[in-house]
Image (cartoon, rainbow, N blue to C red; front, top):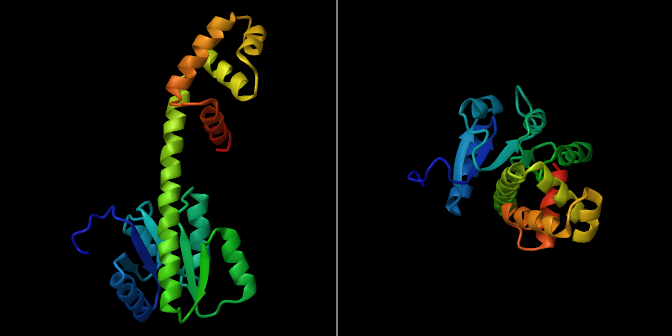
Length: 207
């Protein structure tokens, strides 16, 4: 495990109880997961790993900055790292608050080993999906930025359901010119079909 790069997906265990950190690390490493442990959110932030791939296994009631406060800070900064909370004192209002704040799960201590492993694997898989979606959106943004103003207008009209003929009439262009613009739009957006172009436009609007 020590030879793995720092960019490998990692479970970041943050708990002010050394015994909990050690137990969680041993369990997760035993099933092949990469683990780093920290005694506080401040120590984790200071390590420069806020944007590293992986997930957080975080005590909800840490001394100093609480786990809930740290999750809120992450989301305010635009970070969507998956978070699994642990707590020895979980009540329903706190669990609801954690889930509304964006936590994937809230596990009561002592955590059953199978539940901990399942939650961390699910969180790691979620991080892969989120990172892939962000990378795809970045490609779509760059492609959209490469369009000319006329191409953007053609794209907007086509994805809204207008035919080439309707777009041509609205823009005062020939249908052949609109077709040419549409072909360039499809090529630049790497869209093999109208459905793919519509999906790309939807994702841009959803930002």
